[in-house]
Structures are given as C-alpha cells and as structure tokens.
Length: 561
Image (tube, rainbow, N blue to C red; front, side, top):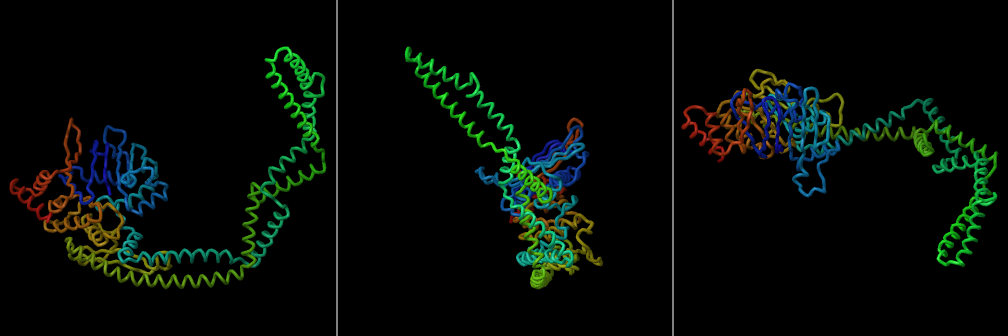
C-alpha cells in the first residue's frame, strides 16, 4: 500500500505530504483545484516520462517521494530480489521498516533521476515496479489490465489455473531445450566428421603435452635458474669473498673483535652480554656463509636441460595461443571438447533418443495445453457474464463484455490461446479491445467491475480511479461508492470524484483547493475530520446550506450501515 506521498515544486504544488489510509481514500475539490495534478505526480513516481515543464516556476527541480508497504507482496519482493534491491535486512529489528520501500523521483530541467531505497535505478526498472505496485485508471493511462499478458494471467488466476499453466510452461521449456539439442546434432555427415577430426586432434595434442596446472610456475623458476647459472655463480662468489675469502673479510674481522672482547671480559665482566651477542652474530653469519656455499654447489650448468625447458615453454605458449590464456584454461578446453566429441561420436544414437523424447514431451505438452484451453473457455464464459452483471450495476446496462479466446498459430509456454478482453459499452456497437475504449469514465467503471470480480486474484496492491463518476448520476454514484468500499477490503483504493454519493464511503477524505498568496497560486490538500467531511459533502450537494448539511449527514449514516 501507499503509506506516504510527498511532492515538492511540482506544477502548482510548492510542498505537500499526504498519509493515506489502507482502505478507501477520496480526493474532492472544485474543478481545476489540482486533484489531477496530484495523480500526475504519482504517475511520475511510478515511471511515467517527464519534462522540465512540470517544475514549479521559479525553482530548479521537483522531487516526488513515495513510501510503499510491500509486506506479503511476493511478486514485488521477487522483482526487487532480481534487481538486487531487497528490502529485508535481518539486522533491523522492526519488521515494519523491513517491509517498506521508498521510491524517489527527481526531475530537473534537463535530466531525471530515479531511486529505490536510495539506490539509483533506470526509468525502465521503475516502470516495471510501478506496474506491480499501482494500477491507475482514468486520465493517466497507467493500466496494466490493457496488456494481453496481464489479461491472460488474470483469467488464469480467476479460474485457479496457475498450476496447470506452470506444468505447461515447464514442459515447453523442456521441449525447446530438446529441440535446440536436436538442432545441434543435425549436422551433415561431412561436418560431423570434420568436427570429430578437429576435436580428436585437439584432445590428443593437449594430452601429449602432459600438462599440470602447477607446472607453469615451477617451469618458469627452473628456466630462470638454468638460464642465469653464470650470474648466480658470480653473485654467490662475491658474497663468499666478502664474508670469508678476501683479506679483511667480514667473518675474519669479527672473529678478531671477538678475541679482543674476550680479553676485555677478563678485566671487566660487565661486557659478558656484549661478548655473548657478538658470538651469536658470528655464528649466524658463519651459518649464512655455509648456506650460500651449499647453494653455489647446487648451481647447475646444463645447456641440454636448458634447451629442453626452452622447447617446453614454447610448446606451452603455442597451446595457450590456441586454447586458453593459462594451463588451467587449456585443460578446461580439453574437458569441453571431450564432451562434444563424445556427443558427436554417439550422435546417431542420441538423435534417436532425443527425437523419441521430443515426441513424448510434445504429446504431454499438447494434451495439457488442450486441457487448459477447455478450462479457460469455461472460466472466460463465467468471467464475461459476471463482468456484464457488474457493469449493469455500475450504470452500463447495455454493455457487452467478452473474454475472447483464439488459437495461436504456434503453442508457447502460456498454452495455445490468444486471450483478449473485449467490450461494447453501447447497444449496436461491436465488441472492441479495452484499449480502444475512448471514455475515461467508461474505462474506469469497466476496470472497477473487473477489479471487483478479480479482487482475490489480482496482486496489484494499490488501485487509483480518476474521475470514475464521469457520466453517472447520484443514485448510480451510491452503487459505485459501495463497489469501491467493497474493493478496498482487499486493495488500497484512491479515488478522485465529484460525487458526494461516492465520497461518503471514504475511510480518509482529502479536500484539494487552490489559493493565491503574494500573486502566486498554490494547490493545498487537507485531510478532513468528521465535521469537515460533512461540510465538504454538503458543498458538493449544493443548495441551501442547512438542508445540504442534513442531507450529507444522512448519506454518511447510510454509507456506514
């Protein structure tokens, strides 16, 4: 549900913040007061395209924020998870906070930015999320029910056909995967033999190399030692000369110092620690000299082995150029082509197996698709009748509604049916797709009828009806008001209306008005208390004030029964 809507510097709105009830919210006011402006701002928040013209004059940008509760809305949660925008945070103890999202839209003169929970998102992502959160019916064409896939989903949900359709979808995925595999096996004999020869050569070439993932670093280290044996010998000789061989070598000098220090200790025992430290250092340096000598003795001058290493390095480099950047990549390539080689070598057997499996899967798929189609026809007939009944109650007694099913040229994951909702609002007119209906008031009532019937299966949490009372009178307004109240038991509903007969059913009533201050026009919205609601409905009724007030109280009393 939409908990909070805040608007800043949008059209005639300087700054506005609205908290909505979870059931039926009514917005009323004089014509031109700005009711539609509020819905326009909400439309932008849900992904409608914007231009700089919506920014309030004298300001640089407008900002619209919406706080939505998405608790128990699995479709929304799944979408957020797919986009990496999860709201659940186990470190937060307040589950209410964990189950809400904040959408922000910033519009400048040349750019627009969208955010979910402070994370930047694309307008396309916002549009998808907007369709999942809110359905707007009326002047702002934000109507998910106009789309064929949504109509199909609603029909299937209404008839409890989701499980059957999922089985069909799973079989279709399996069928297409098998067809792809079959296509791969449909190589000509010449092509197949060419691939077998190529893969066999590659496998044998890599196997002959006897590669090991650990070999690369070891080979490089050994090559460096053999290629630089002369330098290694020279450097170690220099170290040994400086330590032990040359006149004045470090160890010889330190040993002389040790003898002198020994004599000093005989005269002054306080130098014993210094003598001990020096002796340890001489021992360590002598040990280091032995290690260098041992290393020098192991230095190998072996031109033949060096040549072998050079050849192996070149061979591995050649394989890398052909099969992968590292030895690990080369071995992965070998594993992959071995699998392909196995498939090609047994392709005739595999082709027969796959063809048999394709036949079996398609037969199951076709049987279930036929079953789904038969059930859809029955459900469609029932939905058509119930919708006509609802439309009759909503002031469209001659309307014809039809859920049309046509067979597709090719069956797909949704079955064999092409589904479309058709309507004829007036006698003598043929039924047409919902998207062809011109009247906003008729469209709103059609949607209200459908939403009333499909309330339990439709997951869109927020429904908005703009000017739903267009073309209907007071008595029919009462019927529409009751329908909206009924619908608000399962959905949050926002409704812009001019009819008091609808307004009396509001759980929360807002008055929209314009005022002028310092030669500037401002749109203001006020949440009405009980007394203010009576006054607003009396204003809408018109006539003598005391009579209108009495009539307003009677309407509210009847609505609350």
